[in-house]
Image (cartoon, rainbow, N blue to C red; front, side, top):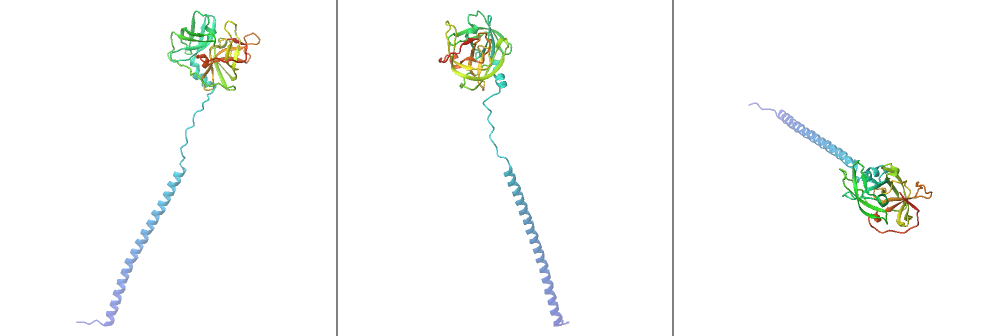
Length: 277
């Protein structure tokens, strides 16, 4: 048997140990590289997650918060008021007398001025859509110069006006009527005074508690609605001041407050020398 010299065996052992260490080192290197690679991957994921989180958070912060829907204004334009209330206005023909009325109830009852239909044997109505009908006088109140009419026929679409509304001096008003036969005319003005009195004949007595306004009205306007800025009927037009005696508008007109027209109390005030129109 051949004997290996001790020196050679020692060298062999050394080389084997070095090889084993090299192999272990290589394995450790691989493990280190995997650990480094895994750590780098985790770092990338963390960075991406942070970036995405930042973007998401920024998007949430940038999203606009909801705001309440603005409520519509209670005040309408004159055109809006006419469009809304015009279909409620009627032309009233009573013999030779010509005036205006307003549909005041769902059953078609019409409010007008008493002097328009006073003594007439026949009353004819023309609605905004062109429908014509005879009407019966269902109530008369000469003291307040108001009357109610019941049409024999109603239009296919009936549009009653909305009654009511407070009245203050200086508030805007709108009058719709048929002055001098010019049907569905619109004029605007303000409430000039309250609790006025208009002179009439001794037989009829004075009209008290009237609204004074300066929207233009003329003969044929009587019985028409006086409206506030929301389109509510606040009065029934009945007369104008006529200092010249020529039945021309002088900037002063009167209306019976809607409450009085419906049966409320009268008031007293300074005289207005009113002419029934």
